[in-house]
Every structure is written in C-alpha cells, then in structure tokens.
Length: 419
Image (cartoon, rainbow, N blue to C red):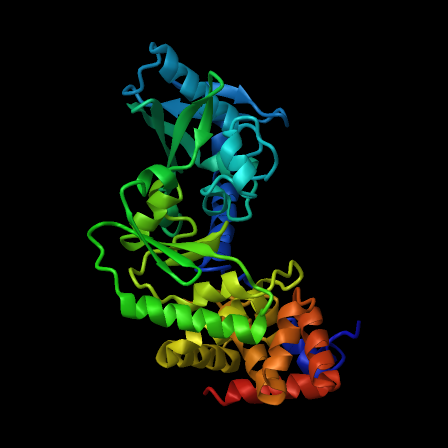
C-alpha cells in the first residue's frame, strides 16, 4: 500500500503535522470520550482515595478492580427480591459490560436474538472501557421498584465535577433496566418491548413502523420512504431481502427510553440504526440517512468515515440545504483550521467544530467517485476496504484508476467547489 503523496512533500508534510484533536464519532461521541478521559485524569486520584460511605457496597470484577456502588435510602435492601436485583446489577457492571459475549447476567432470549443485546451499551461506554468509566462516574442506585412480575432498577452515573468544562457532563446518564425471572433466577432485560407494547404498528413495504398512539402517522412520508428504499436497494444492494422496524419516539429523550435511559447525555442523537431496527427521535417516517445504514451490503471493512459518508451522500443529500450546509462548513474549516488536513478528516481526527467531520468527509469521497464513475464507483466504495486515510485513498485510486497525487488533487478541488 502506497503512503499519501503529501507525506513525501515537504509543504504537505508540515500540514500533516499540525496539532490533532479527535473529532466526534456520530454526534460528538468521540469528543465526549476524550472529555471523559480528561475528567478521569483530573479526578482519578480523588476517586481512588474516596472512602466507602454508608450505604455503599463493593463487588469484585474479574480483573480484581472494585466497582463501588452507592445506594439511595429509598432502596429497601431488607426486601429479599430487591436485594437480589441489586446484586444482579452489581454483578453485571463488574462482568465487563462494555464487551459483547455470553454474559451470564442477561436474559437468554435477548442474547439469542441480538448480537449486541444490551441496547444501552454503546451509549454508556462510547469506546471507553467499563473500568475507566466507573473510576469517575460512580453508579448510584436511585430505585428498585416492582413492575408487574418484574423489577425496574434506575441507576444514576455522575461525577464530582463542579467547574467547566467537565461540569457539563456531570451526569452521564440515568440507566434503567428491567429484571425478569428466568428459570427462577433474576436476569436483566431491555425496556424496548415493554415501553412500546401499547404502540401502533403500520407496514410500508419491508419497513414496520412502530409509534405512540398520539403520533399522527404520515402515510405520504412512509410511502416516500418505501420508494426511496426500493431505489437504493435496486442501485446498490439488489440481493437485499431483509426488513426492519422503525420506532418513532417522541424526541431524543423518548428515544433514550427505548435504549434503557431515563436521561442520556452520552451518545445522544436523533437517530440510530441497530439490531434490525431504526430508532428515531425526529417523529418523521422518512429518515434517509438511517435507511442507508440498513440497506447497504454488510462490510466490516468499510470504516466509520465511509459508512457515514455513504449515508450522508445517498441519504442526507435528500435535504439539499442540510447537505450543502455541512459540506460548506467542511470546506471553510479545511481552509482555516490547522487540524483540518485531508488526512485528519479521513482519519476522523480533526478537532470538533460543531458537526461530525466524518459525515461530510466521507461524502466528499463519494462526490469525487460518483462524478467520475457513477453508481458503479459507489458500489465499489461500499464493498471495499476503507478504514482510515491510507485505505480510503488507496481504494479511491483503484476505483478511479488514477495515481495518488491525482486523487488528492481531485478531492481538494471538489471540496473547494463547496466554498
């Protein structure tokens, strides 16, 4: 694999050495991760020296690192079932919950049905290990209450920050899970089924819409969605024969409830495609960006920038104003901000400036390829290996049959068209 031309060019080499601050992954997740890591550095010594106060319990992780839980006086620990549910949650957070494996504390039905069975996992950890998170975001059990034949546990994750900028992420989330009986033993469970059991369902092609009774279903928008999806499948994935559910929640907090949160700061967004479903807080039946994530052929080597770039180019571009605004911001930052080198953009390492750089950055590559090679080029991009700058440039060279320097010039020229 050939390295980028500008690494061998003195002028470009200097640009490539500009200061790098990581940009966010999907609605500033990565920037939040870095903010959290800074918090961990500042508060780790303090966290390690804190004594266990009245009401705290300790559970030993497999890694021999103790996670401390604080418990509200509202939690009746004299109740045998409540105590069992408390122990269940303690065991879970000490069982490497940031990892996907056959976790013994989660119910078997959801583990069999979903690869990433804990719908709250991505939002809570955001690429951060559980041991890192729990060093500063202390789990505080707010309540454990009976709910039919189940129990529902709510846990606050907060830190001790009192000064900006860290106080802005003082509350990471309020986690909420059900505990259900499985063969006489308590096991954890997602809230989605229970939260939506009284919602209405409406089918549109291979999309099953699921929405609250107060939502006014827009058949026209659903029909537009069906036509859009059929067209994308025809052009880019004719082998597609799947289906998915589309949950229309009331705002971002309503969407958070479907992912097991009473409150969510980490990973908050208006839409997600996951586990055979789309979750949306926009209240709109037509969400082309998220549709793309469900319709393109599966490719574990596609990489985040190209994954989001394809969704932006093929989906978000349906709203021309939104698309142009994003591309114009990228063009402006490319000219004025030191960290916005092409390499940093395609590595998703440009500093955060109010928008996820991966989206327009990946769309920029789609623009160049589609202009010269049309849908055939986009199909090759979607199916190729494109993790980071080197692979993206190499794949683009292969698709366009051009040398590296010409590819880079085309990309920069295209970006300047958005100024």
